Image 1 (tube, rainbow, N blue to C red):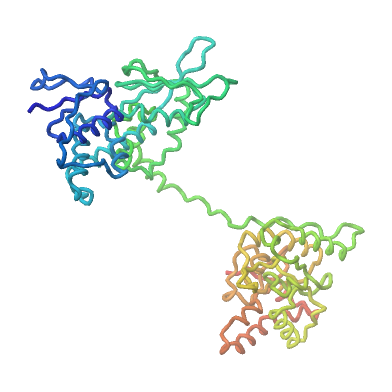
Image 2 (spheres, rainbow, N blue to C red; image 1 turned 135 degrees about the horizontal axis):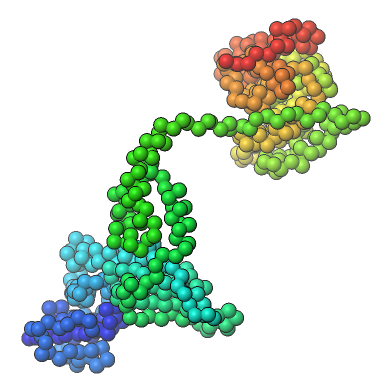
Length: 522
């Protein structure tokens, strides 16, 4: 029995194939009795004398005899339809035969759906991936160039592309969405597509699928009909050469993602070979070059503002600063805190004690060092014989940073950017208070005063240079003692008192030369 020859309307006639395949399957025509071909595909000589059946006039199909085997209703997985829509775009002339054979087997061989290693399924999957890859390459490697148009017509941009498969009509809607307002055309050897956008002010078209313009498909073209390089490519090539990084060059990866057959469509492709040849030399120069200086994570400290303007009350200045910090939103901390906690104490004190930030109780009360850490500090002041009224107490950060755990607000250390945002308030406060010396309680305070990271455990008990050369004594924050090992709390307490005692001479008025001359840390 001679095979039936089915000629589809075009290379991508998916509706025609679907209609014919359903009819053949219903008539129980097995795959080996069907010959599929397209208009551009000549019929084999063996069957040249056979009558060709076309979709417009399908051949009469025999009815299925009563009681014969076969499907009562055609049911296939939805994924199979998606696969067919893409595989019909493949350039393999046997693609329709493969799809009908798979359809036949899916209906008659139930186990095929659970056999991913079946040769027909593997071949269809490979064809699907090849079509998808070709569609992706067309979207990535099409380059439009402007061409001259008669006066009064919209400028036209034309591109040339050589696809492997019959994908032009499937990919054209992508370019319509991407360049809706541009008049463009894409030339390929098989067919060409042209998009003419609707003129400005045109009434909207009815229907959700209506395009705001006209999309036309025509015959194929030759490469000679595509436009050549334009003036804009010179600028693009200059930019591409300057951003080329030889240290990141991977030729094998580039060739896999951008095969050489597409290079003729890309203006920058002409630079790849010379730039790749120079990559080793340029990389060597980069390695041998002197390293760039490390950028400071914290900017250099600006000069302090004037202490107090002539005739201005310093106490009034501090009140204005306190109100200003309450409104500060240079970092997110101020938005969530109850209020700002400004410093308290006399002007021009012997010592200014600077902590990290207010805690939960300080945030509620609006006064510094009134919580557990402040109570421990009061004990230390009493042990040293210092009067709290003679000291100025403040913090590097003026708002309480916390995280909620249930109904409790747990202290959270401020970040470097948050400390830097609050630096201006501390510097203005120092400019008004003008202490003779500082005591930095913890690493955050030490960094804010010294201008660099200070390892507290190695530099505690030492005097460092602070703002305008005013000495800074570095020691622990009292909260560090509260968090420490209870077994070592007494020894840590005594060591902390020893650190603080180094500043006693400032309170007693004995400004010994060795204390007033701070030394820089090693």
